[in-house]
Image 1 (spheres, rainbow, N blue to C red):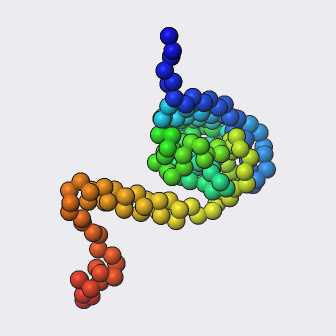
Image 2: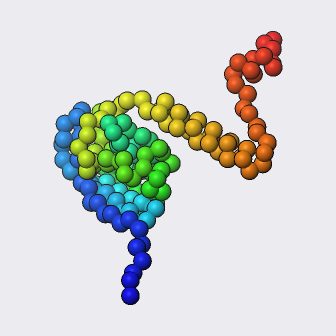
Length: 171
């Protein structure tokens, strides 16, 4: 009897390095990354930070030297946990697929972060990736509008800033 292929399976266990001003201070926890088919389950466990750390950390995906905002993690007294299931083609709703992801970073403040990468790539955690994310969102909206046009035969076009100014004169 031949078993059917159940799809892709991959599992990673990555330690998080706690950095202050770019210098490693100590271990700050770990995360587990499990891929089954078209879903990716991630579990982050942060521990051992300062007892005064009751903050929200920003989870950033690292891909090709760029960081992409994914979600937030709540830390209480220097500890916290995060659990999510993401689509492998679009991790946490970003344009990063699981095959292009190099790891993740948790930004705690301007000079403090937790870093866990399985592919050691240079990155700039303070780089502005908003334009990359907005460009991708614009492409997604255009794609969705094209799909709606194909289904209904009617195309609704958004008004641009210049057209908006022509329609509504200034007072």
